[in-house]
Amino acid sequence: MGPKAIAALVMGASIAFASPAWPDSSDDKAREFVHLSGSITAIQQVVPGILADERQIIRMQRPNADAEAVAMYLGFLKEELERRIPTLENYLVAEAVQDFTEGELDRLIAFFKTPLGRKYVRTGIEMQESFYRMMNQWALTATQEATGRAIERLAEAGRSL
Image (cartoon, rainbow, N blue to C red; front, side, top):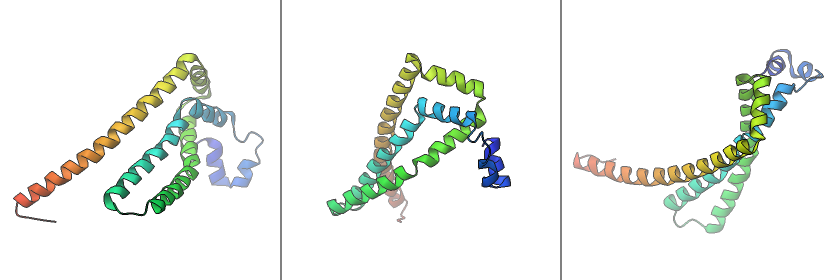
């Protein structure tokens, strides 16, 4: 959290927002860095993954659920999750302000504006998407298999849940 944000908490928002430098340039640079670095894209891609997980859970737990109701529920859930994305963005901006100097932010911004920087972001996002899909499938399969085996072992031990 930057010094102006701390001032807002300690002295009251009206005093801090009256400052002509609010937000300061490091906040602006941190926000630009967060956007250029692909962090916002990564945050936005979390929502479809959550929705896919939720859809899978509903299929497993409620196989006869009304398809229209499920679609409506997932639509509402998507809206609620997307409404919360700015909270994550603001957190990342605050972290960047805390972790990097203005000069470092300038150099990072310059890097992410180069062809190599854009490629780094693009391939990093693609790798994250691939990893997330793989981990999601692994988690579902591994959990189902592990749950079945754990129940078998519990039965072998003469116990049940």
